[in-house]
Each structure stands twice: as C-alpha cells, then as structure tokens.
Image (tube, rainbow, N blue to C red):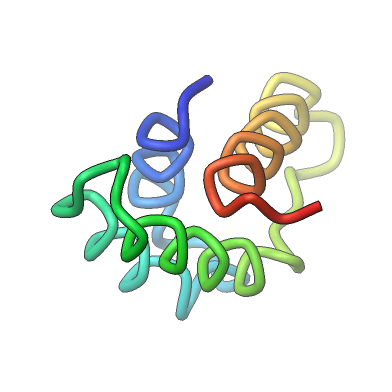
Length: 80
C-alpha cells in the first residue's frame, strides 16, 4: 500500500470517530506532491492523529489494512 492509498483509506473511513482530525490532514495531503517536504510533514500529522484508529471486533481485513496504512504513512513521513 502506498501512502496515498493509505490516506485514501482514511478519507473513505472518515465517519470513524478516531479519525476526526486526521481526515482534514488526509484531504490536504491528497493535493500534495508525494515527493515534497510538505507531504512528509503532513504524513507525520496524519500518523499522530490515527493512533486511536481500530477495526471493529472480528474485522481482520480492516485490522490488516489499518496496520498497513499506518506503516505506509509512517514511511512516507520518514518516522523511525
């Protein structure tokens, strides 16, 4: 999953209460160039605001997607 795909997943799940602030950061990131410093910083904001994002109990597909999305966005934000 690319960072843009992960960000799109956040936007698709914007009704989830744990994504409140991350949704606006994600929408802004979709308009940015993936190779820019601004995008990198935006990914850091997004990662910090999806810490409480969890899948519904028993939804293993979504659980894996969330994990993969976090990793992709962290990588794009160059967070170690």
